[in-house]
Image 1: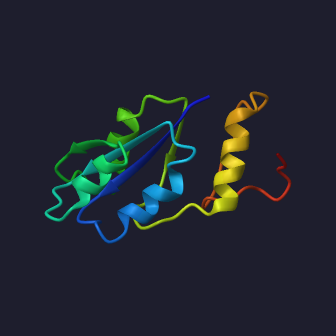
Image 2: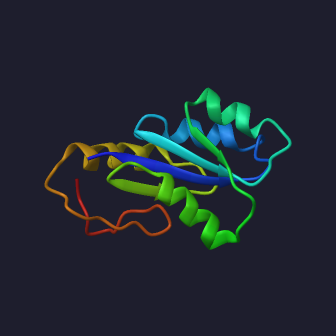
Amino acid sequence: MTLTVSIITLNEEKNLERTLKSVQDFADEIVIVDSGSTDKTEEIAKKFGAKFVYQEWLGYGAQRNKAIDLATSDWVLNIDADEEISPELAKRIKAIKENSRYKAVSYTHLTLPTSYSV
């Protein structure tokens, strides 16, 4: 199982590095769809090996969908450029990826259901 982390951005140099550090250990691919940053957003994204694509702003949903369309993995995790995945959640995502018995899992607000165990 592979996982793409998708992020939409506009001038996120203050947040993006922290966000990308939090996903780098489990993301097989990082896709960033940017709507015209004039800061160091692109430089930071490329430092982490992200696929960086410019797309004029289409609206929130359409911009997110563009990022999803560019993903090549089995799963896609959408996060905002100012969000950070906790070490505990990163550990659980890695465990799920390594365990093929899970066919489908849904996350809400980046948390696991209380009845779910790895």
